[in-house]
Image 1 (cartoon, rainbow, N blue to C red):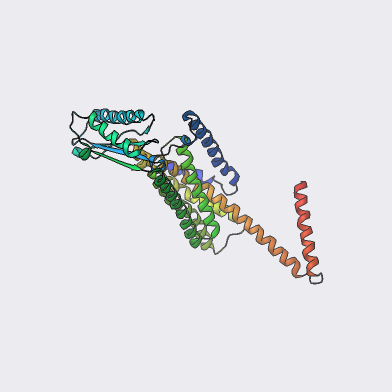
Image 2: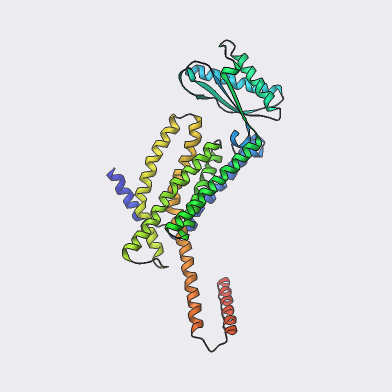
Length: 374
């Protein structure tokens, strides 16, 4: 452990991120390009543009069936029964001249409460009629076990309109989270810190969405929960960096300026490197274990969270600090230029105001022309 800490300390001493905003911004650009390519491949293979993203029933509409067997199921029984339930659903869809998108069977409950849970996306046929036929088909398929539709089978449906409403509410939830965090950081620090932090969070969400598309992970309400989880987790690492900058300036009784802002942010990033990596690795171990031993529904949450954790480290150490320095330098340059303009015109009392304004406009045009010519 001490060797690892020594290596991290050596690495942090060589880490200078403040003046490399363009370099760090190449990462999301490359990621978006890869996402577009993978999206196109999935859409082309499935011959449907909407299939580029693996949307779950929560956002597309559909039904779910839960079948209990009044008994615990062995692994072999679970696989056999699950396959037979999926076959019944596909057979009913075929009778209506349709093909349903059916999920992998999932085990729910334990002991005598063990059940098999399957989702499927209804076609254009009447949902109520199809679901009744599926229920009857499952009862017939497991007639030897003596299950009934009333006691052992539960089918729930979500309409396309309800799915759209759910998607809209999920987007609103994420936007409200961003807005609240922006206000909080602005109050605790300043507006530039708030903007940099929110841009970092947008990058985190973008990373999770892109990786979900690239690996074709199903997007449902669990994914939205993962998004909000990472937004809350990532902002903590970013705030630590800005807090280090504020503490250093407060201890020395100084304020940031165009000459020291980059170096102060670099030092804050170097001081925060060990902490950010250590806390992320600790969290990643737990999430990784859940991914390995968990069922599909758990993986739909843990995999996006893993992508978000990695993105959160990159955001808090590279994206947000470098963007903050870029904005502060631009602000300092603007203030300096404004003060120079005031100083120049303060002592020139002989020239009429209109002529001074005209002269300054010409000077600015001349400077722009020289820059373009170079």
